[in-house]
Image (tube, rainbow over all chains, first blue to last red; front, side, top):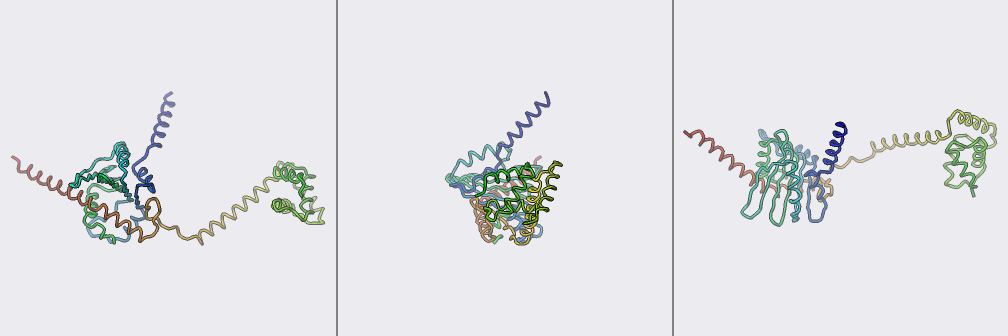
Length: 160
Length: 166
């Protein structure tokens, strides 16, 4: 009897998890859909950057710990309605949120595993436009801080 | 015009159930008919090839047929010939195919990313897209970084305040 119960429970759990969607799967599913502009960079891109960019002495390189990046822009606000429950279910932590003078709202989420951020999400709600950035990574909060600093300061100039 | 009996005999041949007389009939048909339809040519190769028929070589045919009949009696049907040949052809084709692929196929193009679901295989295009992406996210990261800095400075002041507290 106990064996049967365990079997049924295992089946239910596996079926339940099979039907679930994670953040990356959901965002990737928007690729090529009308109203969404998506750009995704594969681990191959980051490997190429790591090989091309000279390591700065004493400073961790920007993309050392990033595996892939996905950016979506859209004017369809349903994206937030679908994302929020997934983030809540998968226990993403709200890291920071800012309200700008121009009424835009920026939210940062992180998925933590073993004191490391494995998935970093930035959502910009600009009332009419939405931008979602997802980084699949493996970095500590200190490394994440360094990344934000480097992206904000060096921006695009470093990678021309 | 091929008699329908030949088709029946061929079916039985591939099932390995025809008698020695029926097999002789098939051999005779393929050996003596010059105008074999295209769809039956593989069967002709199969039957004449295996038995090694040569015109005016009846004793040899009889001998081969006898051997086949013995094999059949021992529970081995003609089917295995078909499978053995098919398997050999497959093995040869796969070995040749793999070698061909290894020597002539171009290297798979690296995919740097996807733009609206379409793969980006050009290095320059990928770099341009990457730069414009960073361009988009950079201001928000700047804001985030400034906020973190503010919080850090605040916490430094808090430490100082805590130290000088009586």
